[in-house]
Image 1 (cartoon, one colour):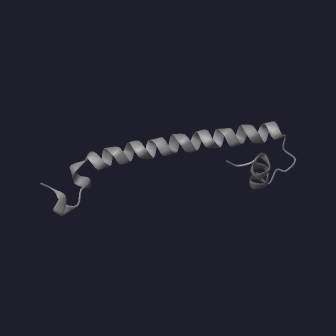
Image 2 (tube, one colour):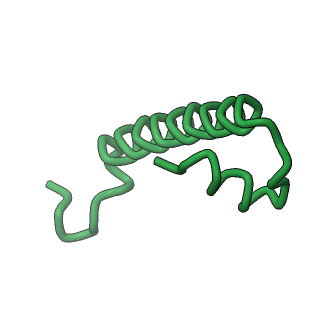
Length: 59
């Protein structure tokens, strides 16, 4: 997990309040979780699709 100081450095806003940096960090982690879950969902759909299997694997 990113520290508050790392968030401030990445944003180039070292004077930012710790609470604001923490809020931004937490929201970024939530966004990353949503993106990852969407990727997993799409991957599961693609894995179940017959067109996603290699030609030799179809029976």
